[in-house]
Image 1 (tube, rainbow, N blue to C red):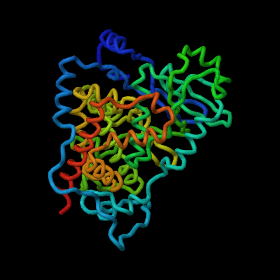
Image 2 (cartoon, rainbow, N blue to C red):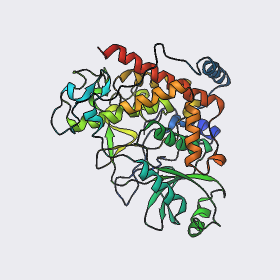
Image 3 (cartoon, rainbow, N blue to C red):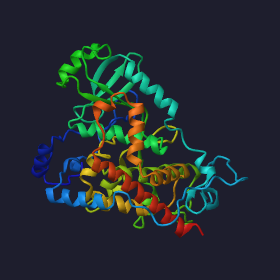
Image 4 (spheres, rainbow, N blue to C red):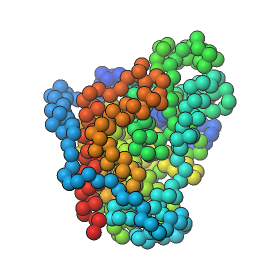
Length: 410
């Protein structure tokens, strides 16, 4: 584990905010179908609080920048040009012209050959099963000591998150729905459930619930369990001192077709973590570089790969709620990651442009959340301040894409 603060100071901070130093914290993830994955290392700063003065400064900045518009005319990525080859990528080194289109977008040839993610149909079917199937066992696993590896009567399994703080479950849930709103399919399916040992779904695990000392009627999240996951290391282009993924030959030199398909997903990951302000994945690695120069050469926290090559963005509990609360501490690292990136998926960029133009990103997220999650009214939503931050960070992404376009489109 990377020790970020002296142990006594760390315990005091975590105790004040109701968090624990229990290992792990993943909502999903295993390297086999029989045992949960080992806990990742970075958890220390998840419970850092803001001073009152820092909070006031953050609120003032939020009010000033809640709806900035990027300069220039409204923009969205163009449709694919007629006649452009859409043949899937194969093995072997690729050429820049094969993978980059219109200056700053992954080509259709790349974008139409993505590894399998979590489709809309898959998510809806899994949610229906998770909300209606009987639970038959709750085992230790899925990271934190308060979490459980849940099994349903049909053999399906899920990571059940019992939040030490309700913001953890809310952040995990809203991050999932924001990923669906953006068209990013790398976050596993999620559904909410209310602990009720008298209800049919929970009846067979009553003793397990009582042994866990959970409060009855608490809302928990169920996240799809994915077996046979492997760890993921930061791509070479983001590990060097230059740390850059731009549409340039030197950034994509000697990259194979399979590696390009992974880089496409990394570009989505950087945008997603910036928008949610999730520091518990990439930003934490940048912080750790101060005392661990080889941190980028090891597996990335809360990121795994399926057997088909799809990246899985797990454990998003720090996103949108807690991430926004501690943003002054982490924003420099989020901005640094964003500057590294100047090549984007067209679908993701188009959605960001639409959310910028509507100036209603939080409203659209709320509509999707309420339409998809029956327990949304009881779980709650973002504060007004955090809803404004969703929009301001969306606008920042839109402006960044414009700046990259102006730099590389010629």
